[in-house]
Image (cartoon, rainbow, N blue to C red; front, side, top):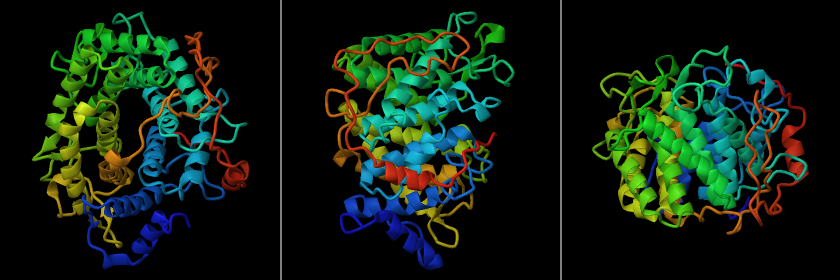
Length: 457
């Protein structure tokens, strides 16, 4: 046990006591209380993952959870380590991520071909990018590295930029045989924008920044983002993107917020990017009722609600990206931190179900009235907003110039697309050699005896 306490072990004991607990005790003035609350929900989150058990599918979540949400979950757990320094889950998380990189080391595993879209790949790429930015322990040197994986995803996505309709943009789907190939949406393009902006800051390479600018400009020009910075869901190229589906989700607003904050930081406080950050952040107000986050498009507090399995996880990403933005665009803190605090309090009260008394429900706006609506997304969302309240004392997000240790490969992913990818030339002095490497024996122990079959949707 490290530091006198293994947080996840404490959470597991609390869970085993059955109904003795009633909601999660959360005192936002106490670091220990926040970490203990996060540990409890992290245990609940990882209880959905069985891929680290012999004979099961590593890196995947069981039905009804799609592959992309598994990638998002492991990104949440990377941040759990970042916030709490609890290493208990690191071997499982590292092994899970590496199990899904595919033959070209770009998160395009062959058995996901029938379902994988640009946003699916993008969420795994953002998980790798997060691992690089928080200095999550690097994989063994003979395994794919976090930065190189994010660069591979970027290269694949940039190669798919489609000028045949709508003057550009990414399609939702990668392959023509998948439903939704004619849909150009905010989340697919948001993944490209987000990863490009983060790579620009991490590597110092202006080519990534150019792609971030290009993607933002297209999203705004086509109408997926309003003049007031509200982000809408998508549009069809069958009408040359002239009709916009104006439904709004938390994760769409959040993905552009964090990317814009990265560009603000990369440009050393550009007034243009500050205005964009402020605009996107201000438009998050529709996702809060009395200071508590909710999914405006599908949560109805008077019923179980209409949010589907995917949408039940969306609050996790807005929570994560609002918090992270305060690190690189500090002027956002006065707006975001109070909302994250009030939402965390409400989420902790909603985590009052199940035989353990700490299973998390969906509707934070109902406070202590447990709604009985449980799942992976609900656990991830509660974990993300609770641990976000440690952001002020968390380490800075690193770059190659400020202590980042992840090894990159600017030409990664070149074999994964039907067209030749856009290859980014490495920045001078970038991609420094790795340090703090997780031992090969530790990973081998996690991987040993586990099959590598990948489930489809």
